[in-house]
Image (cartoon, rainbow, N blue to C red):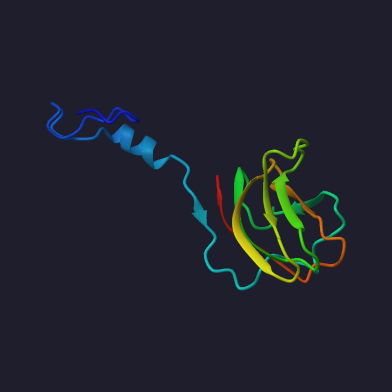
Amino acid sequence: MINSVFQIPQAGAGAGGAIPADLIAAIAAIPRFADRGDPAAVDFTELTLTADNQLHDMDLSAILPVGTSAALLAVEYTATTANQSIIFQKKGNTHGINEGKLATEVAAQKVSADIWVACDANRKIQYLITDPHPPTAINVTVRGWYP
């Protein structure tokens, strides 16, 4: 039997069950999710973000290592008014299709989600907050990243 992804001979397939060292090295080199660990505080709040229905840059370069392609954000959002959103996208995207969005249905109700966002080469993403009034609470924490 042959593994269809890596073409690794399985035990009893005539190779004595041994996996070649170069295949082991290639599998070990496959990028994997990097868990940030246990941060002591959230990274961004309603005090550090701008709520004006416009796109703004969010610089993650102090957290993400060079070469990161996407970040996993833990987002908590409590809007002042109903039917508001906080949206995240890769910096430079223009179509509003490939974005992560968290929306409220009623005022003063907290919603939360984990959102994957692709970042640019400088480890920046963009966000937009639709709430016309200062949001009650926003907490954004980088949980980890994908190289």
